[in-house]
Amino acid sequence: MYRLGHGVLRPAPDLFVDRLATRASADGANRLKELISSGRYGAVIVNYAWMSGMIEEVREATPEVIWVCDTHDVQFIRGSTLDEGGPRLWVDPDAQRDAELAALRGYDAVLAISEADEEVFRRFLPGVRIVAAPPGCEYARLEIPSEPSVPPFRFGFIGGNMSANAMALEYLLREWWPQILRVSPGSRLTVAGSVCRRGRARKAMSGQHGVTPLGFVPSLRSFYEGVDVVLNPVLVQGGLNFKSMEALAAGRLLITNPLGALCLGEGAPVIVADEGTSLSDHLEGFLSNPLALHRIRSEGQQWGVDRFGEQRAYRELRGLLEGI
Image (cartoon, rainbow, N blue to C red):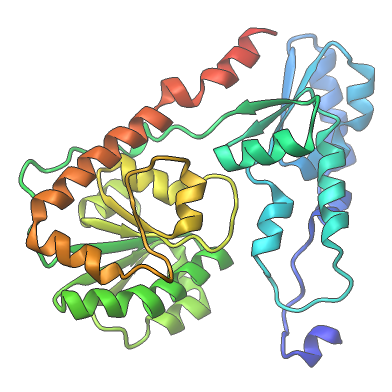
């Protein structure tokens, strides 16, 4: 009734404590017992901390097994920046945080996919081994054309059907796209991914000059080959933003905001636009000097591959598993 009173018809999405109580199953726990009893496995990697209920009984009976949680995000940090589902009663952020941390304390190692997540885990989980395990990005690597791009530049945004992506698209269309068109009226923005199906995203794109919704694309390569600049404001903090990592690996200029830069890590060669920075100033510089854009694309790709190439990305995780 509370949500109906605020005009929200859909049910509220599960919180962390809801998922912790419901996602694990007795069948899953029994199957896990069978696999471990075979003696073939020295480690178990659990996807998401809310699946921890499935392993409690098994873990106590198998002290010789290394238990690892692949967190994907720090859920209580993500929840603090994403009011997904609209208004709801009786949400206690401290209870969400405490439940997540309590679940993670039961593991021998916790995987962090970004520097920001690693810092949070080290602060809240003393005594637990924190393993840096960002995803590798070499699958997205493309050759950068030898000739600099000629204005007007081609802009792109890509995202799945998630609230965070719809929020980001609304923001860039409201705050960034008007600035871009003032400087370069002939610019075009291609929006790819299933975010195009989301109602608020369709509404935000409706009537926008120069904006083309593609929807789902079968090939990331074709999308990135068709753009010079990727726009990706990050409004919800959660792990590592894959789109930003892919954009750098593909050799595209990335324009993001301070939170997006934080998720990538220190030193990323990207354009950071915030409330106090005029995006149009950066764009005017690239319009007058396309070689500068070409240079930062090359620097960004090298930085991305150095940081998220497979050798470095999986180094600590390999060390953990090889030590079993």
